[in-house]
Image (cartoon, rainbow, N blue to C red; front, side):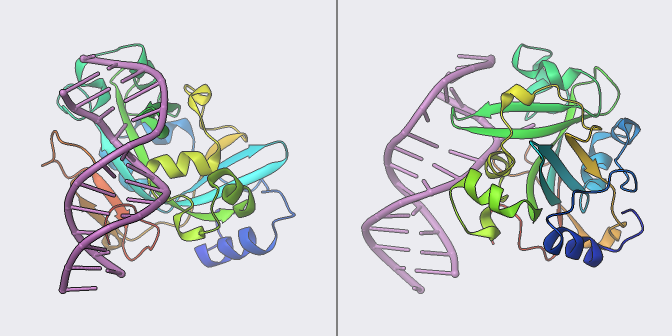
Length: 218
DNA sequence: AACATGATCAACT
DNA sequence: GTTGATCATGTTT
């Protein structure tokens, strides 16, 4: 898949749903990818394809919005006060999942990155559904494709990801990120993070310019 | 008491 | 369409 442009990728995902993704030719992002500094991972994840496969069903969505969370120098990060039972996954291996429950109701998906043990991760805030849309609709309880994966809680629900997937590796066929064509730097917008009250001055939110699949206002 | 949220509904432009 | 208030719900500090 790595040589297809995004339009072809979309056609493949939308109109050949009966065919499984060919992982022999798809480029799964290696764990090495997540070793970069957190903000760079957050930026580079824009446009990549998030994939989950279970029970022969494939879910895929193009990542459109991310936020970087640092460590002790970032009061908004769960890892700011050091390792705890909740944030343990953040201090684990880069290229693994950190899933937590928020407001007692929703789940948020993070990709652990940076050097192992540093406690940095990227929150996946929104994505554009590409495959398994009927399943996402069922998981979410709505038919509005525009809103299926908009917002971190909705994204996790659409993908059926709960805290039992905390610590999961991100380079398996069960759950992974596929590489895609490079997004021009000018098409990635960098803003302050949203939904937080601390460290609001840091520009650690990234989203795909012009995408309709972005959380927050307008 | 706060929380890296989302759905709903009233009241408005 | 948009904005603001309110609430649901459970875990962490």
